[in-house]
Length: 133
Image (cartoon, rainbow, N blue to C red; front, side):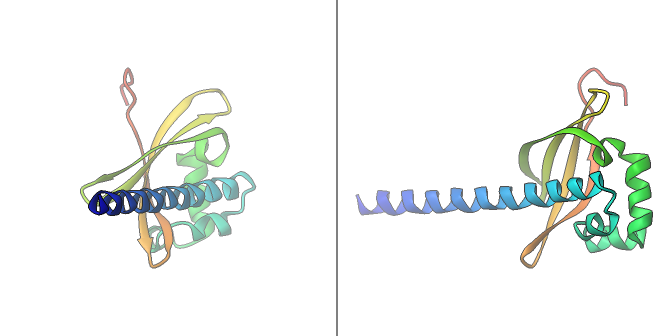
């Protein structure tokens, strides 16, 4: 009986840790999107990993890339967080974004942990069934 109780406590604590991790990751992505909505590229840049920051070099160049390549992230109408999953040791958060025209986009955000903070290490489009791209 005691072993069963200890197992339940362990499982419960692991679920709590996973839920906290999910909330932290969703908060980072959501906060970056909120910064994009008000053109605060300096703030949005802080949520990017050091490697992404190194690629773009400045918040202005980063913001230009997002405006041109990810306009649905820059000006979303609706954002929904879907599943968080691990693939080959990397965490990927799937996000469904509806743009101003009502088109739905699925994106995968690769997340990395740097000490006690989560950072966005890349974003890729997810091919949806019935599309050619």
